[in-house]
Length: 309
Image (cartoon, rainbow, N blue to C red; front, side):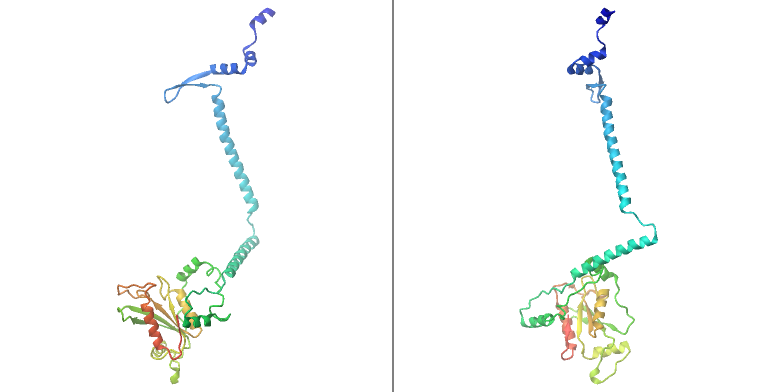
């Protein structure tokens, strides 16, 4: 029996355990199978390694999915813990009040940062311009020395202010202010220019002759056009692609008339509802129409009258 056991020798598994690593590698290569690829070449692929390769790929993708789901779960739990919404009306009121307070505080700080006196650019070396500049800036209460404070939410942002110029209609027409339009013909080329006047509610017309104020708007208009202008006149120019019907022009004219001044808005040629009847259109470099309007208004001023542009 011992002889038979010695002759039989070790089993196959025991031989694999006792064999060196290079021998085990040779034995594994014997288990390879031949298969054809799509290109028609014959390759050897170990049978024992194929499931392991697929198993590793699947385990890697499974690990990525598990990591992604864990990250999503933790992120959602974090959002729920940090951004928990209130369930009651009182809670919502507190949240909205806090947000409004933060927004108002930001706007007020922005308004404070933008509040400053206007910047003045010009050639003030000439004596007449220097005197005017000194009169407008010689004290803290001068018009060019006082800081300009923009309005909240509108004046603090240029885009909103531009949109408000198109959207807001300005002051209404049902009041005692007299508004009318005057058409001027330019002597150079026959172009039509529209001047929109607005008079204060208590415009003195022909007071030098002792006449009383006429409450009829048409009569006040005729009296104003026939007599000299004793109040200061403010000539206002509109922006590009605008006219005097825009809200910001009406508001500026009303701010002048509320102070007792006469406001007049000049429409460039081709603007304000008048068709362009000349080859020349308006532009910032051509000041011929503006000079003609200034001369026309200056001729109607009383002695010592003032015209502001």
